[in-house]
Length: 160
Image (cartoon, rainbow, N blue to C red; front, side, top):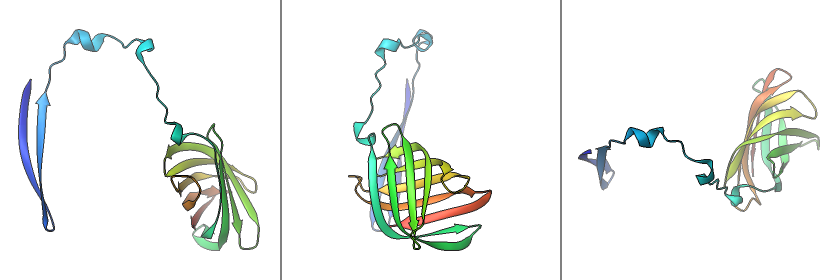
């Protein structure tokens, strides 16, 4: 085993940080690498806080556009995510019209999800929705959607 320790000083305004790096070179016996890990030794851990159903209805302000032209204002949004990861987003505009998108959750963390949009009840739509919410999932902070609808580029921006 070889090792090398180097030091770096970082100045940030009035604060000076000293960071030490250790670089090591290890030799692993070939017989250790070649042996597969038995299936019975693998444990899959799921964070139960990141799974589960989400249902939120939120008032706020937002806009939607098609081909980079302003089309209208959004006043309310509803988000429903099933335990299996199926998502439904419903936007209501200032004329009380509803547009529903469906899709699959592709990323999830304690503060938000990313949804691959695959369908809409009004038009042929696809895209991605990035949704940020409170850690207790009771408030939607923001939603940004980009994609295509009937082969036209569209976007939605919504904030609480």
